[in-house]
Amino acid sequence: MKSDTINLEDTICAVSTPPGVGGIAVIRVSGPQAIAVTDRIWRGKPLEETPGHTVRFGRVIDPTRGDEMLDEAVATVFRNPASFTGEDVVELSVHGSKYVQRRLLEILTGQGARLAEPGEFTRRAFANGKMDLAQAEAVADVIASNSRAAHRLAASQMRGGFSRRLEELRDKLLDLASLLELELDFSEEEVEFASRERLREIATEIHDEVSRLEKSFSAGSAIKDGIPVAIVGPTNAGKSSLLNLLLGEDRAIVSDIHGTTRDTIEDTLEIGDYLFRFIDTAGLRETDDPIEALGIERSRQALSRAAIIISVVDASRPLPSPIDELPDAPQAIPTILLLNKSDLASGTPDGFPHSIDVDSFDYASVIHFSTKTGEGHKELLTALTEIADRLRGTTDEDTIMVTNLRHAQALREASASTSSILLGLRTNLPGDLIAQDLRATLHHLSSITGTLTTPDILASIFSRFCIGK
Image (cartoon, rainbow, N blue to C red; front, side, top):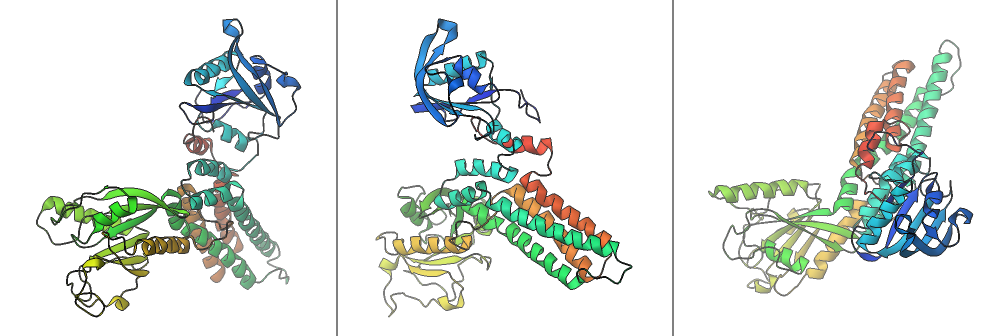
């Protein structure tokens, strides 16, 4: 079955644990016949007589093979509406044999269940009012989270923090709409329910919050997917050696030959609460080699995509002052200046053969470093996590940050609509014209939570879920 709508009369089943062999596997059955279907292959205290939120031990049998025992199992019963999907649910915990998992699904489908589609359990939870669409999408983000920070953002959204914030904005929009409606109804009377100045104040509050949420997507997506850190600088400054040191393995080729790195190399590392995505780039210099030139262009592209930049220079050899070999980085991107090969630097009071006017650059941190001795390693890790904390903006677990592109696009449209509302109020446009932008804003915000959506959008969202969720 593959459709844009789901049939809530069907009983569905799927393996909800990761594919492969494990100690146990959990097969989830959900739908109006979930308990009855499972009871037909269950030997133990009848599940039909079992209260919700109760666990039973028994055996799963194969009725097509003379009631031969397939496996010993634990059955957890949930009765509607107190379940994840809002339906009757049975979760069978069996041994993690691939054969047992496959055969159990075959037996269940033979008894009247069908295999679930990707994300169908969560989609049923949405359809049955157990969660809104933003919370449903957060379920997938919780499953995919690969750092504490990413998990906290997804868990907050799954608990409904983002949805509650949108509901507050919706209430303010409805208040604004009602005041405009009163203005229209009593426009010929000498009655003032709210001044245009008060309407502007309400609209400004709404616009500022919508814009803040929309702008949080850049940092939110970086935390969700791994904060991109571009390692840039001149050739032979030690960029590849730095990547290898951070990862604890020889990920990049290290050579004294200029231009060895000709393309970007990426790998991830979890530091503290955050996942960082380090991008080793080709050394920046003038070159006639077309292949190296292509690598340098990709380095500059990586620079523009980075949330953090590590600018590596060789502190053991003279450089112009200011450091002309450093790339021009967008001012909004926090940059760490890494003075590498500090163990080789000597000859001046400050330990460097040249003068570096670091005060003329707005660096997030300046670190004396050595990839050979490990000097500055801890300081670099600390600097990275401190910048990540600032990107997140706060340590409050209930902070709302947008991590979903669909949500960001809807908020961008809503921000444009609220800008039009403000413009209309400032220029004293008639209330009925302003009301059109109000309705547009409500539409965009409602599309995030699923209050207003289409079957095509739902099908697209839930098709990205795993089968057992």
